[in-house]
Amino acid sequence: MDLRVAQGTLLAAGPELLDPNFMHAVVLIGEHTEQGAYGLVVNRRSTHTTRDVLSDELALGRLPVPIYIGGPVSLDTLQILHRAPERLTGGVEVADGVWIGAELESLGQFAEEDPEEFARTVRLFLGYSGWGAGQLEGELALGTWLPAPGTAERVFSDRPEGLWRRVVRSLGRAAEGLDEQPPDPAWN
Image (cartoon, rainbow, N blue to C red; front, side, top):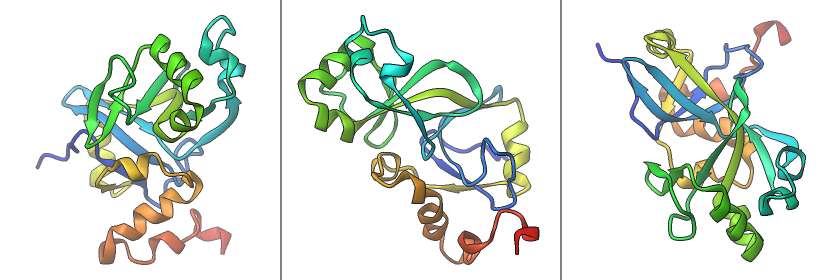
């Protein structure tokens, strides 16, 4: 049985997943092959902005653009999701209306020219989530992750802190009540 999920799928962490990197996380899958999987946690906004992590020599480094935590791997790398392919150079569509990657220069120019539109259509992440060969398939088989359709509306939600519950509720009867369970039954 093939347990690979399609590019652009959202994975909501099962309520029993207590790893602090993924508890109540929602991950957008960028790639899932026999060699492993790559994705970005889309509902974890950090306390940092681009002013904290980029040089002020870059236009983007002079602006207070929020930064999200994409996952625990390579926290020194910047990942980009956007829904503005007409404004940004580079990138690959990973879900309907969701692109990954863009050139920093075009990002800075867009952010300076139209900061409000930039804030609605671009998300910046430090790090990513990664799985080795067979690792994500094993976690899916155990029910650790709950797959859901990825949409631009979910990825660019203006309320990312409530995204996990909204995604779990969208799964219907199969996940009924899971959104109300505490991550650890001992918390009851």
